[in-house]
Image 1 (spheres, rainbow, N blue to C red):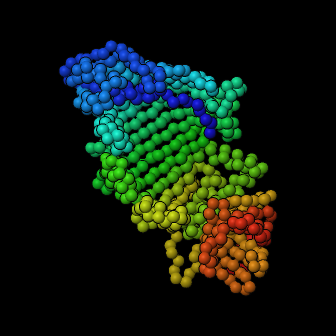
Image 2: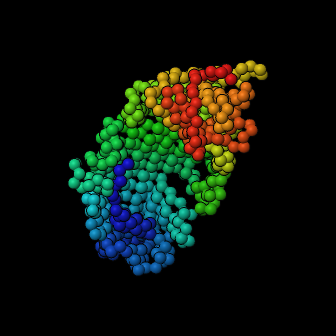
Image 3: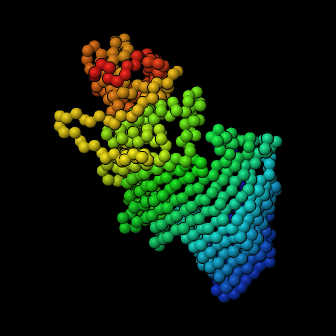
Length: 546
């Protein structure tokens, strides 16, 4: 990812100061105005307010002046802010200037100011320019409107200095976006095409509904964020390899809090990327106490301990991104895309069921992922606790991620394939139904490492000598069992993939032993954690009928 050089903006801090001042204003009896004001900032710059006027305010001119005075005591300012009312507070243009920087907010205005609450805060536009060693940057910012802004809780928290105890309430935000360019700090100014990264945002919106101070519904949308990197930058090079000249993305979020059930549902979290596709999430939490929204930091932390996971759905819709990723990975391994795609699908069909415990639903999940890789349209994966909501504290206490996975019912559906119902438990004495088969690619020429090597071992038999020098045979079935034959004695253990290693444990072992695996042709080399390796010959399937 490219690195953008954007200086700490004194202008933004100045804007924050101006907005705080808006809250500290006026309403109800008289119109009060001040002369245009220029202040020196702590960094040595200047902040200029072209117009200060409070309409129908309960503040005197002296009180209004104190709100904008850097010399007035903070406690006195807070007291004035807490009582301030005004039908409208106008600041006009706010200009912040410092060395090589200028930030202008145009038409800044607050309406319906009432003791830390603002019915509507808006500006008509803003401009930012700056210079540094990497080059010149500029942003043209369009209009912003904020409705139902409530800063009263933050103002109360300011009394103690514990701002984390405060909460911000906003009913609605409508932002008309921005456009500009900023220099890439890792790209020379004289590089071909320059070093400016161009950015543009179409719009952003936020809508929220509350029950008292508790947000019951929230909807957010970020539309058409475009990043066009400098032609010679690292990001541009990476994008070019994927056949892209820019990134264009959007994001949506919607959430619902049920005050009676004390559940929170993230109904939609979707990230969309042009020419690539989208990833969407849905999730639900139980045990969500109201104090999580209304309490102080300590109360929120305590309440978070009672959260529980109820379900998660992930949906991937391919828009060309899967093909681009497969082509890039195939090229890096000197393989054709078709061969690499088949190999990857085969690995998914074997490794995923093993990771999920080798059950029938695990096999169908692996088959769905393999089908998606083979014909990438859409993939939906759902995870739900098997026995009601899973406490997040309990999940953390389990330690091993695979122990958490064992508590979940995980299913997957690829577009074009029907959802597989969980297989019924076999009757006593009956053999379990075999897992659905997934087409396997022919072993690739050359050396395989990591998951590709493990894929060549799982479901097959290896033979050679163990660490004691005894000849043996090992069969790694696809359900996580390893059957060992040494000195005519069969021992059954279990195996699991952790990272890119295969870990084995037998009944007589005190702990598991993990190996990295390399495969060349039909020879597999297992290396332990000390780097000591042994070679084994691979035979297809359960060659010794273990």
